[in-house]
Image (cartoon, rainbow, N blue to C red; front, side):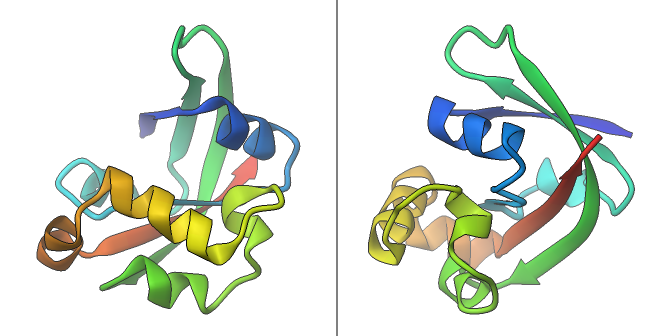
Length: 113
C-alpha cells in the first residue's frame, strides 16, 4: 500500500539526503493504516510537485514524542542542526498535547527506494 504525506522543505531535503530516517506523526486513523513494508510518498510543500518514495522498515509506537526522541539520535528525526527543544516545540505546534494523549504517536522509520 502507498501512503502520501506532506513535508516542509527542510524535512523533505533531510529525507532526500538520507539523513532523516524517522518521520514523527500522530498515530491517528490515517497513520494507523501504515504497515511495515508499505511505501510512503513524501510531497514537498507548498507546491506538492516534488516527491520522494520510501519504504517503511519499522513503526515505533509510544505515548509521547519525547519518549521516542529518547531512543534514537536526534538527526534521525530532523536531519539538521536542531536542538531537541526546538524539535519538540515544532511537534507540539503540529499536534497538541491532548491529541498526543488521545491517539498516541508513531515514529515511521523509513528507507529511500
